[in-house]
Image 1 (cartoon, rainbow, N blue to C red):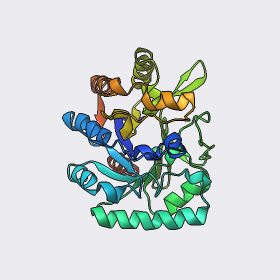
Image 2 (image 1 turned 90 degrees about the horizontal axis):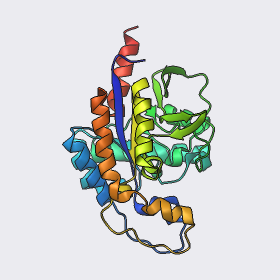
Image 3 (image 1 turned 30 degrees about the vertical axis):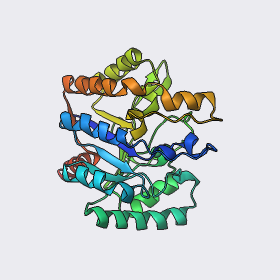
Image 4 (image 1 turned 90 degrees about the vertical axis):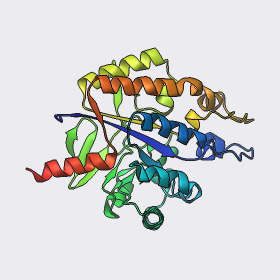
Length: 288
Ligand SMILES: [Zn+2]
């Protein structure tokens, strides 16, 4: 346990067309809905919160100005793979080669250190995690202990040291997992994205509050389209759940995020980026 409580606000910076059901739909979608990126940053800036932006490598050059402005304002640039594909499905040598290249190119392009990684779909296994560590990332934030999610795989990190609930270390490398609420033994992710947006907010809010009172680490994440003010295109041939996923709760999400921030503040949480938390933990380690 820490002396302080930490909350990390993150964003998986990807275009609407990176959303799996949109990518696989047979329709030609040419809208990115990245206005939601600006909406999220606006809410965070109003609350003086710096976020960790896990950005898809091939999207970053296309939104250079947006990202650079945020980096200058203290938000952290991190990677959400080089393309929006689940690492666990990529052959390891290909993954390593492309990730090394993208990390280097984006560090130079933005003149920023890239120390963190989050896998699309939280799809990380031990082999791919070891590569992330090996090529110089300081941390990963892909561990979602919820195997019901699509593409989630069993990540074996039994040999890592447990630092706090959902935080693990291996040498100077950290795995920052996403919080899960256990309801009568059944896990429910309470870290954002669809898990918060699609649920019944008064109920989810109660779960989060209970979790926050007992713990000292919380992570929130979302995708830009979830805060868009544009019209979500109607795509034919989508499954009923995917139609629901793409639309439900978007109108009220900003309001709920603001309430969540107020709850965190009331409970004494400090807002940091993952890079800042990593540096705090490394400093603490060196004191022993
Ligand atoms: Zn993603």
